[in-house]
Image (cartoon, rainbow, N blue to C red; front, side, top):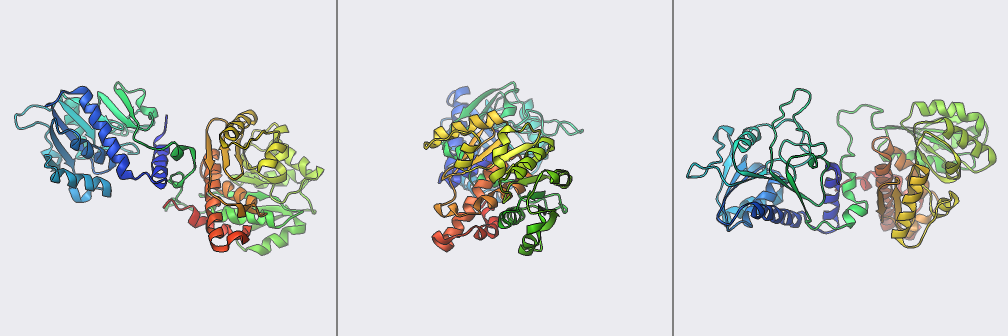
Length: 488
């Protein structure tokens, strides 16, 4: 099954892979026409009720494939308000093909009956697709009531209008909303089953419309959809991140923190030993530095770090931390008592398999660190993906295993990322990734944060390689993250 949001991402990823949306709409419309043929003989009357989005566009295409039927098209709204170019092109194609079509701009003028005054044999509901929220408005509300009152066989495109594709409940139901929705006899949905369709009293057909497997398997620009800031948000609502690291190194926690900012976090704090605190602060006035006594993070700092973590959405644990016994002891104690969300990187990773923690972890090892965690690897990407998924299920945390092709898994799903380049083997890029994933984990789920983080950092690295060739360095990446995270 595939949710509405995930389907939108896959659709956009397919377009990025070179499968035009126009081609997908053509395939979808053909699938709708096949469904009509399955319920009605040649010569039957068919009315297609179309909205002004791509759902309606699918039905406009279907009308061209139904030449052997008595077809009529009703467009709900003015043609100039059709929302996408491809749907508009298919509306214009109807006139050239001399297929009867009329517009409904006033719900009082909506009529399903033909010239003989009879209802059509088949009605295609293509008013609203998945992703639409709220009760049906006019003229869709009046059209839905007329369709439900008809004796025609109703074929819905993708999802019956007024039904939530993820839950199967009316979009206007609950909270006093109007529960008006299409009661379809059949539904033709695309690419994969939608969760909300299983409970409907309708026959569901899943049509293959040519979306390549890679659009789901690999992270792409579609995975960035929905990550834009809410224009009404306030400081802190886009994520507060705490980076815990430094001691032996000052650059690593700084790179992670600056990357968290560039990936969208509102506030980023760095908890680091006082021996490097001034150096970290000197990199940027945007950072809030909290100095810890001494030159290494150790067990005595646990309470202070737990207190700082309580005010953050996500902790990024490990950049530049080192791996002496005291540091490992701190990581072990912190994870034992911390129950929030954390990105674990670098030397802190080795402790994860041996710790019983309630924390929600995203681990970001490279191959060597993954083996050090007792994970198994392989050269074949499919085999490696399976091994990562098995290990993620075993330890109960999300894994992002870095490599020429990154593998992300939460033990159930697996996604691969192929952005990035060999120049990114330079030191510090892993710290950029940890900070980026931490920022994303403050606003979305761990699996998506890891997948999108890998994609965006790889994209930033590719832009840096275009500018600097093999001479790129980790500091080239953070400022390129905002552009890398655009879904265009």
